[in-house]
Length: 240
Ligand code: FPP
Image 1 (spheres, rainbow, N blue to C red):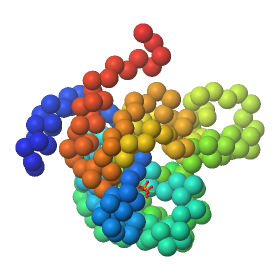
Image 2 (cartoon, rainbow, N blue to C red):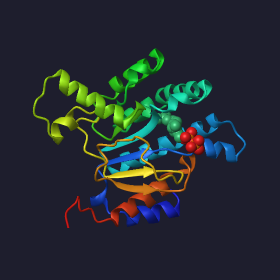
Image 3 (cartoon, rainbow, N blue to C red):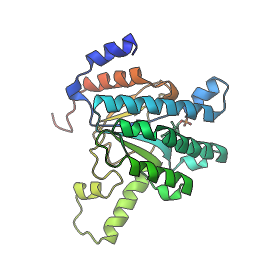
Image 4 (cartoon, rainbow, N blue to C red):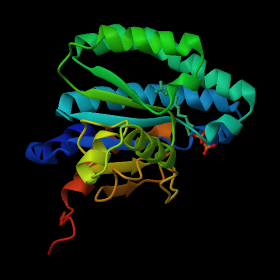
């Protein structure tokens, strides 16, 4: 561990670790372009950041980590990039499953995965099953996910069930994130101040942290910096 990591870690208040962290992992394409590489090289480097942030969150006792891996809008990217991202997902799951199992991580997904290829769904199903009895960090991958689509889908299922009285709890329980606490902290890399259709309902009171750091450069130190910043915030949830 670097001395900077150690110093930041010492300053962290272990009693104020967010229960749920959500991340918009942006900037893989720019990272690759700056180096004269194809975009997929950026995504591959981004997968290394995923690995490090998942480990760090597990060690800190974070309850859930939700990563925006593929949005409903990402399908318009060149077919080769979409294919490459899916391959990277499958490869990463295959490669990391053992370590995830050892470190107690559980896996779940949000979003409409029925649109993903059979290969991707099989691999997801296999790893979700392999990790289902773990009790540590919940790694929640947003795949073919869109916040508006998720809310619509919840409303449709309420109509189908003929539910007449709807309140916030009932709607929450019909979202893909049912059972998870709302995110305490949303991190977005690469400097854009947008929600991009991510967890629209769930982020009503979430603290936002935007960093210029591109996702493939976002490592432990950057996570610790985000957490230290979060710990200086006073959360009032609309009160005084
Ligand atoms: C945004 O960067 C990134 C994505 C759309 C994909 C995120 C995927 C990974 C980090 C790959 C691995 C994921 C897992 C879960 C193994 P961008 O391409 O929009 O970057 P740009 O804005 O600079 O073009």
